[in-house]
Length: 319
Image (cartoon, rainbow, N blue to C red; front, top):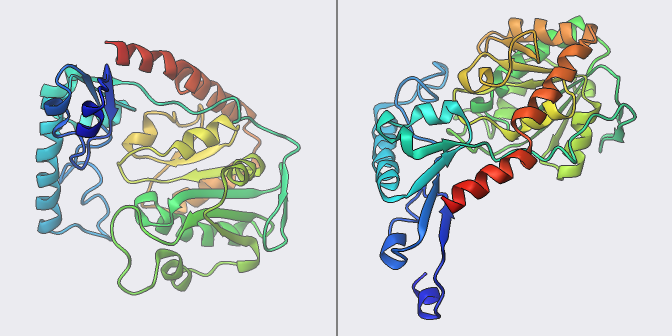
């Protein structure tokens, strides 16, 4: 920024994710610029993602570490001129004294490329040919890890496959961790869960991380999509699945409940109860529930379409 200033550059607005200190000295360099922060997450040692899952507890050091991170987040909120966060749930994680400074504007999903396709089909690397209308379950996460309920999903899947011998499951996600830690007794959580539960490998298709177009096609052939998460940041994938007409079985956790109304635009299940998750998925495979699918897409179009988010962001930038 100092180099830019020496060249005569003077920005009107600086919009940044300040999470790790990137904007601490912005005002020292460009004091006249309007500084807007993207407030993704304010940590809490209780009541959100930390210590949510007793199977993977956080120790005292973890709690102390996030309190230290929060010192930086609080300073960021003092330094910025305005701030934005995508959801009401994320706003609530921040101290109330800063709420008046933070606008809730979801960045939106691109409805122009997210739509149902009754003719969708694709052939997976293992040769399985998937078509829309088949009893296909989908699960998507950046990484296959507990934060996104992978352990609960796999336990539910072992139940589902016993009830529905003709269903197939397509799983997208890498073997690293984005949040939390790797398992101590396995190379990754996919390996760990495959040791714990018995599933039919011929009907369970792990794709790893895939190109966006393939991801879209997977959701278009999905009959029921599962989205499970700790009380943490809501994934775009859930909204994108709803936009493409997927019937979503989501976890009954705060970020999901902000979007999914049980029995109206999707179904909710207990994050920790594989039997409950399995029963909801089986119900979705047995019943068309076309009204819920249509309502899910309508709700995303009304509240989370990028075309609506853009004007709100432009207004934020201009002050």
